[in-house]
Length: 172
Image (cartoon, rainbow, N blue to C red; front, side):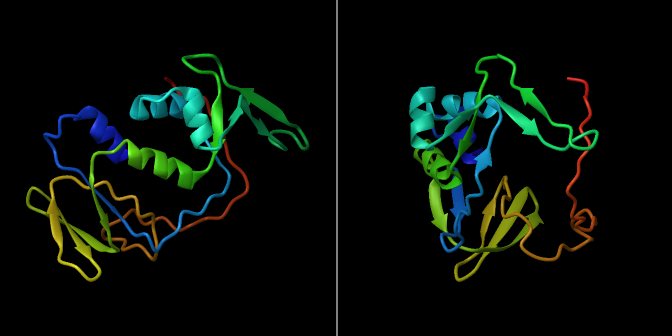
């Protein structure tokens, strides 16, 4: 999504964009949901009509989010999306979303495993498995957290599994 956004912001190619991915790591779909803002953003990134995007993603529209068992015991409620530019979101397929965004991105694709990213003067150096390192001005690291984090380089917060959450209204 970052590469598609950079392509949209710099369509004339004044910046070189590299999309680095490891095709050995599959996209694992879990029934992804979205919010109305993503529907609008995808239309802006792809310049496709909403109906085409929904078909390409094999998406189903959702008009709100149901919260079951929140608040008092056995109390359910539904948060309906309010009309803005669009009043619905999608349940979608993550792999189809990646394919759709790839088509809308002007980038050199590099299929390689990233083994490390280090800050260097003026940017970052990306280390790869089986190929030379490359230097970049700006890196969006979307690898997730595949292993234990180094507390000297990351926020040291242990994983706490939970099945509850607190929702609070925040200022806009």
